[in-house]
Image 1 (spheres, rainbow, N blue to C red):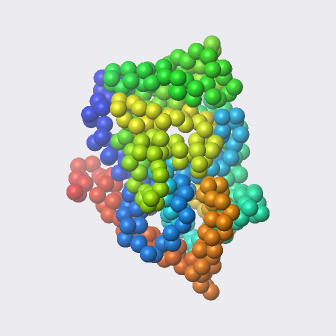
Image 2 (cartoon, helix red, strand yellow):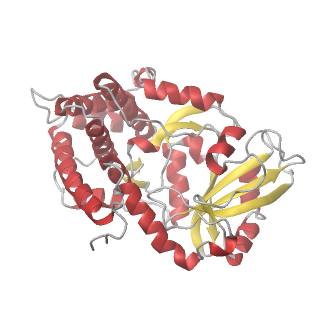
Length: 409
């Protein structure tokens, strides 16, 4: 990326470059394509009327793939495995999260060259882990035995400090955000809007909530940049803000990295006749507080340049788990554990009678050869076939080609 500020793209030019980057990122693997194609999943759901049971209306993740589950720290530094990304959250059908997670796990298994029978066993373990999380007596033990990838992620999360976060996110422990591939300069209008935002009381309280900071600590905006990040967020307003909090900016807790992300209309279908905030930022934050309390307590809704945005302070402990290469045993353990995490997120919103009724529904429609609901298996088979074909077509259109060769329209 050019080092001269004048050679960076203007806000009006960002969209085309970001779309190209997103398309190439999704072409890296079938699993990457699934992570970046949430809308395609919900297009499939529209044709699946009657095939999927109607679960009790609760806040769901809406984009429940394996990359959106992992270690999350709360404001006091305690770490748990929870849902990490709730941009698509709505009050909806919990079965949608199960199907989306099952699709993601199935594609991860295919990427690890595991046989189809392993995918069947993963779905069985998914349902088992999810249903245990709905049971008061078994919920705690459901997430006690962590698969190797989760144990590794937890060890890494516990040992991480601000320096790890800075080197990973901004690659510099000095109080600046280096411009380059990941960060582009803001326009003057964007910079002024960000500065005004951090003078509001609500945002000040978000920044001082962590590390036992004082409510009256001085907050200095050290740097800000447009953040080029993620498949789902490419093309939206995304800003990284580096703050100095208190008198010293170099001690642990004295620097703060804030992620500002535009909240847009969710693709996930909401349950009929249910109340939900109209403002998309309010929706995301409220959903996070219900599904992932550690994350939700560190988020705030706001407006930036007349757009709905939500803010959260990034912590070193918030990391993504690596499920790129799985063994057969690890695949089934991961399916059980991750489904239990999702089950706990759903269960905390249900009373005992609702949990029992939902468990009974999940226990129906099982066959002698597969200890998982037939609707789940048939949904995953259908989705895997559709996404495999769509991924190959996506690669034909967008993957990198030899110099001078044009990409087909």
